[in-house]
Image (cartoon, rainbow, N blue to C red; front, side, top):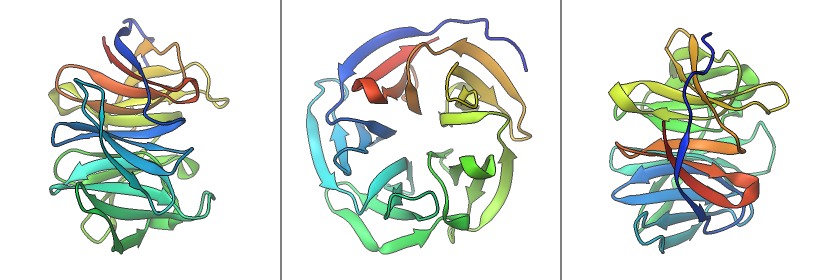
Length: 216
């Protein structure tokens, strides 16, 4: 693993629409995020920073990613590590209760998409898995460290927030599909989740109550 050689430049730091924002995704011009405090999903206009949609989730939202014109959301129904489900969420229509599908091994948290398939983080299994339409595992990517979120960025590369065993010493890094990680820059706050809009990254400073955009 290479040592981090770059720096993160914060572009904006704005109050989150609710406490303890965990998952973040971009879809149809809005920044979608879920709160561990309210168990709601919020659609926020990133320019005006106004909430355009506010919907109760079936449980605690852990991950969110767009694919096939809908948002897929990882939800914990009982607050445990082994009760995680995937739900489909359509803006303007809400959650599809019939879409409830167990995550592989009933565990999972952060979620991302490359536009073709879903990538589900399973920290307790120390891996990211790709899922087909029936949520069957098609590939495993080993995680060399703990992970505070991941997403696809410039050149279609997979980026992640790496952390040590105490979830300190966060870094932005790239991760290839063989599990090789290259550190890019230290992150000096408690970042969770990653979403890229083509020019800036978005992440949640979860416990501080902010949503941060940044560049390298």
